[in-house]
Amino acid sequence: MSDRIHYSSGNEHNPSDPFGRVELTIEADGAATLEHHWRMGDGAWTGRVDPAAIERIRSALADSDFPDVPQEPVPPGSNFRHIDVGTQSAMLTERQGRNLDGYQDAIPVLEALAHHMSGGAYRPDLEAGDPLVTDVRAAPPE
Image (cartoon, rainbow, N blue to C red; front, side, top):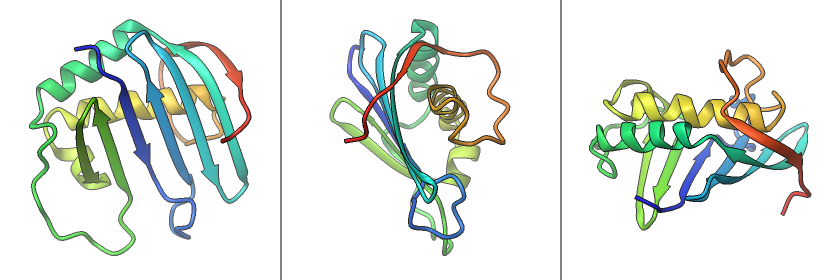
């Protein structure tokens, strides 16, 4: 599978979301861009994602029902995650992302990538483990 992976999480306009919104795009060759939008200001970075991390994401999504997500009532204030791979797309709540097979393995990798690329600005509370991205550089937000 050589499709681009795009991950979006959060909402910078939701007062109950302290982390804002991230938009992470990972190309098939590992080139990555991250945009972080939150109340304290915006940031953008580029970097190169470790091929093993890309494989972990793809493998986890292969173990899920991606792009299918069960329809459930959405509690007010829910935080959504969007995952796009090529032309397939899934939208799920934070709770579904923690509990659904495959997604519960893919999303922590995506969150850790966003954390590392942002230099900890996104999810400063996250214990993200080993860096999965190299050659990180600040870039002007779009």
